Image (tube, rainbow, N blue to C red; front, side, top):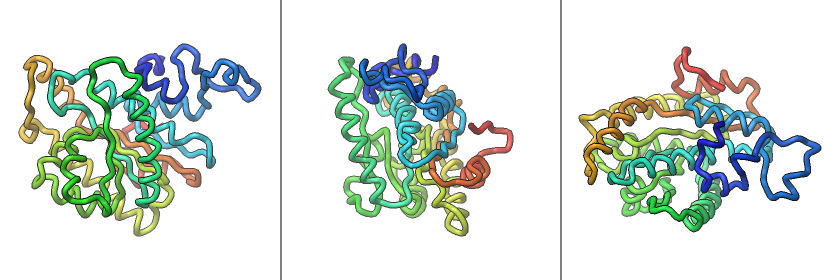
Length: 273
């Protein structure tokens, strides 16, 4: 049922089909002959959890397809958001993908760029194309405003988030726009954030959550629009969903949920899968 709610254009990027992408059986070779990819159990559960707005932590072995667990929901939500707000300007939801190093972010950006290019080529609708960008220490300051205000997916690291984006969110309209639209935060290689470094990143994420709530409040959200009624509906939806969803991935966490809750600002009564 969850896969059926995902746009077919996004499913095709990963070789999936809503009608025939159930869980893969070890002895099932049918996907080799049909060309339809089947999900592993952890992928199916993670995608369903993330699409339903439940904080999600994925801890499986290296090479087990963890990237798909967050890329598919992130792309699907951004694509759906753009469709729903196509009569409004710059109201598509945003996602931040956090990586511990610039090299990992650049590597993931290369893969993501190919997916977005393919998505644009296969999409026959008039929906604006999804865009992704990197904001880190190597990104020229002259390009940061455009990336923050025009892209739906931002790849960065905790240092840049702490030193550049959060301190300037109320000084730069582009950063305020980004954080007001932020709906998903992905933390890749979550096991890296432990000890003093992990405590620091935990406080940065807690501040990020607070700033998102303030930035998305009606008093801080300036919107230009061409369809008044549709934009009012979108703004009301934004206000109701001002708390971002957290997704974390790692191959080497001994106690995944405990680590996840310590790292991310997730309340005790909030569900984690």
